[in-house]
Length: 134
Image (cartoon, rainbow, N blue to C red):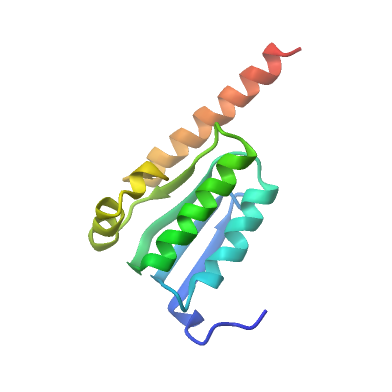
């Protein structure tokens, strides 16, 4: 894969076996490939909700929104109980998410602890269902 010329405008840190992705910089057409690969790899390999932390994302355009929507739909296709959680968007990014109705496609949380709570409750529910099936 060829690195996009503006890839340095975006950094993605992958944490918790791909279940948490911390995005820093501009999420736009020229940088989405930097996020696409680890995001879809996390969906394909890590069971459970995926959290995309946009706390340090300074800009998002329609291609970034499309990537988040595609990732959400792909995750739900693997298990309808799962969700893509977007955390702590800056006011400019949050405004774009609100204006475009992304809250109907992804779960938006104000803080990472809020997202962590949803991840932990989802893990507990999965464990409870496993134990009930024994």
